[in-house]
Length: 207
Image (cartoon, rainbow, N blue to C red):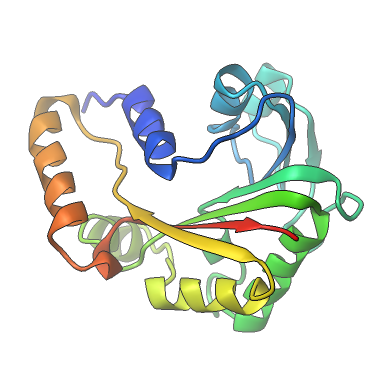
């Protein structure tokens, strides 16, 4: 199957619709192979830092600023970064039991390392999206979060701050069926209840 990774990444960041400021420091928590690092560095001109519990080979090839670390105990001082970015990581925190306390504690760590006036950007796949549920939840055993649970824990931790939620579709589509999937995407975003939309995003400004 031939797919277009640039299409997915461009769709994702266009729909996230966040105005990153050139030269600011961003921490990508759970950066994996550095999938989002390239766009942060090349497109937005940010000073990139990444952490994860393992070091992917691609991190070495890209020569990224990276240290081993967990969202449960981020190895940086408080108020170190202008932007904290986390993409499809939160559901992996205690994925088997999905401890609410551990989720809450992880969100508090994101809050701790963000500067005052900075932003925390949290993106999580929606458990009951029609594409994600059969593929990612049932077949690949990703224990994605429900949209209502996601919004509840974010509001709990960041209730003193400015929080905005965004819900959008972004998928890695096979080129052969690109137009068909774009029609599906339009229907999902404009006609069906938002609780089924693929991605839940929270953008928090720390006061």
